[in-house]
Image (cartoon, rainbow, N blue to C red):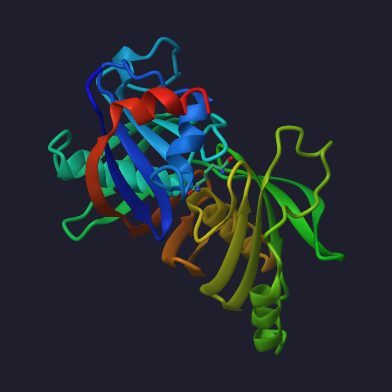
Length: 291
Ligand SMILES: N[C@@H](CCC[C@H](N)C(=O)O)C(=O)O
């Protein structure tokens, strides 16, 4: 068997192993995803992006054009989930850099439907993230402290906790609280409200259009950035401020992201970086399926 080609990239330090597989030939098992994402025995990443033609998929995805590229996203624990906002940005940048798509606007297929992207010459990518659906109030607990939050659906499930308000005079204290959160263990949440697990965001509004955020991702752990999570958190922060639409710049641990929430749509803008490319050893790939 030939060596398996890969690239490595990140979007605001949410990092991915990218596997080009145009005809859908790769046997990407849960074991192999775990091994690839392992930072000691593999390449190391928060997730895997398999690059496959939509026409080569066995299952159908409503609205995804047959002639588009499909982002088959996997979390680092091997789980297959609906959507990854930072992943779409990195995926789009990869398509352009490898000559598979022309710079500018095009559509990428995902399990959460087609996503329009705009790839800029400087590696900045804007993704049309679709409609954000705000659900019921809930809570998350970290280190014995309970935070009020709200369920937000961005194609995948989120529990966004807004810490305080920009005008409460407590910005420094709230920022310190955010820094001190122990996210090495998953925040406790209501399993009935989130039967398939949930990504949990903590967002501290700094002023009406800036915030800081940390996130614990389902199937990964704390990551330095989460695109869908940032969109969810901004929707929640705007709602807490009495606004249904608006634009915010969010500083994640891995860098800034800009989110615009409209009535029926939302956009995520940020950098996308390709770090390296190479090939996986054929024996490693074979053995990764059983270890
Ligand atoms: N990092 C991603 C989200 C990846 C999926 C998430 N962990 C889930 O299980 O829903 C992003 O940038 O959106």
